[in-house]
Length: 87
Image 1 (tube, rainbow, N blue to C red):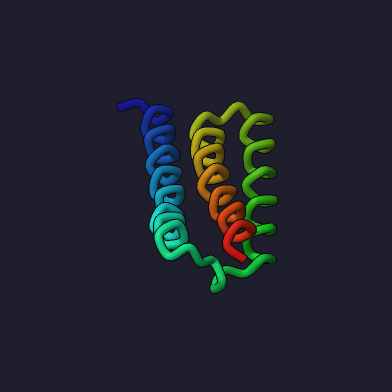
Image 2: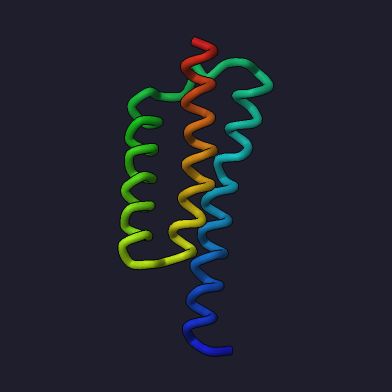
């Protein structure tokens, strides 16, 4: 396997794992209809960081960074929306 293919697979795997880490929290928040234990500042800083990763990924044309952070932003954004909805 070429080194560049390995690095791409490594990046995609890291992106998938760190992205799906938010899925249990999203499901728990949705089912419990409560996001009380989630910090506003953590969610806002997280979403801001994800947007900056997206900008960076676009700038360097890195598909694993772009793809992972789009999905992560969707999950984190949905958690933020649920925090607003269930307050």
